[in-house]
Length: 256
Image (cartoon, rainbow, N blue to C red; front, side, top):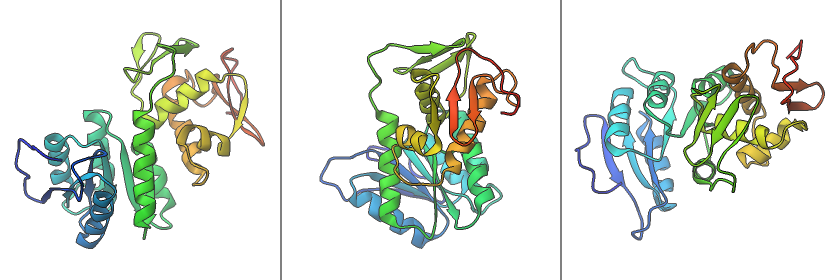
């Protein structure tokens, strides 16, 4: 992250990189543990990213505004009265910046809440730095993926514009995260077929491994944004024993 017009504020560390002049993107690492932050920043820097650091919520928001990162690695447990959930909410309110959350191992409720807050992925502590780099690469690759030849896709009153990353339903904008947009796009392109959660993770997330609750949470969040009655989903239907099917006919499922 070079040529920053505003100096870093309190709690921030200027961006660094080990590079050869080529950057694969700008990443902000937010963690109050200096060892974790240094290790994460070091591995990401050696992988070719320009990396900035912040150690609390206010500093993170200031850095997002000043540095305009391509992705944020965000710890859930932060000092100063603003935890990672609130930081993620405020980041998402400002614009579509991918967020990978760092959570303590075993805190499943926190991981699910992080995804529901708008995080695109999570990594549990203690984590493998190499895994973190791979997750960053996967999220950014999905974010930058070229859209298909169609200028737009739609059905059931929903219209997606892949180039603009814009989604509307009945002419009203839908506020979707990166993964929600990609999941909805996949469903719209493949209506009528039932997909397992493993298939959706592979096709939408690009992973052959991972916590399948990630898919479940994103389906639930997406239903809350596109269904008339999320408790009786008419579009994203549960196929018991299999997974989910996108039904353009819009016949409500009594059980969801």
